[in-house]
Image 1 (tube, rainbow, N blue to C red):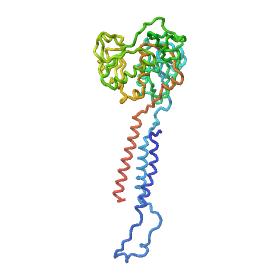
Image 2: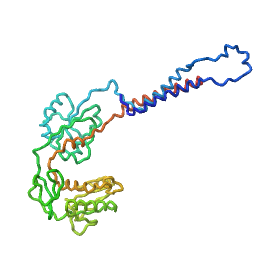
Image 3: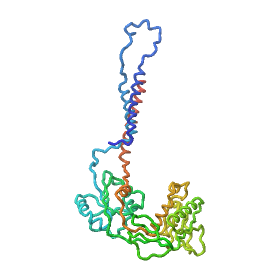
Image 4: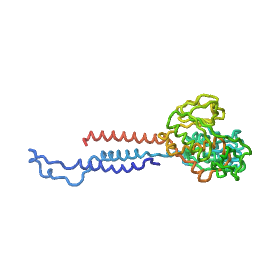
Length: 407
């Protein structure tokens, strides 16, 4: 048995209250003289000595009511005798041949033991044959989180075994919540190394160096692997269409900070200028109407997306949807000055400046995955209702006896 609120058991000390009141109620009252007293014999006038325990059943019922109430408020979780006590294992496997080949023995043993195996997909797909890998190998942290959310209702008394490739793309989300105790089984794809693109400007090159840091230097990092040819950009043209004045100031200041730190040229406009083509477009609430200023490669950052309908967002794939406003008064991240750093990460992601399969460190990987405990509510609710019903029945009996005996 588990108690969700064990401190409430200290309320059981209140059981002393009905005991004290019980004896106080039997305390000798004031003697009233009346005419017939003289005819009573002396023996009947003698006081009784010692403690009298009258109405013992009533006293026990009142004590039981207090103890039962404290136990009910402590919110007990009971594992019924018929419930399964052994821990089962569920294996979640990334649909990748590298994972299957590295953990083939463990996965085959799990199949022999009859344990459940699933491919990591938005809707988990059962594995009957580990050699039949799904044709689509799409994987990202959002797909993994969606898979874990689907299993959250069926992981009671379960140990999750996660088999994934350790890549830097896992850190695209701040936290991955796992609804049960888990173990991570990872492998690094050291063979797959993609040459990194970079942005070339007149006097500098913007690239991700070997330490996975965004850098701006006249020459590329000699320890990195980059593509042979790239287009020289004169500047990054940004259009800020946000209607809120404070939000527009935050975005403009952040773009200026980004340009200053990385020695970039970022041109900012608040209204479309002639036939100028824009790389970045910032807007809120509603997307701007299609015009010659917006091309297929235009990158949109839309704030306050809780006010933007799905139809307005569907016609563009290169859109980042931010549910909050870029306003220091409404966003803690903006107030703490984190917007320039976030824009830098967005720039790296949009221009694919870091496509390599760099792995996370042990500390980064294990801080990313968090165990989010999941409790089944029906079992707790059923037992709590039983306790409440018992309390009501005993209270009714206590009131009946108290009224009959006038105690």
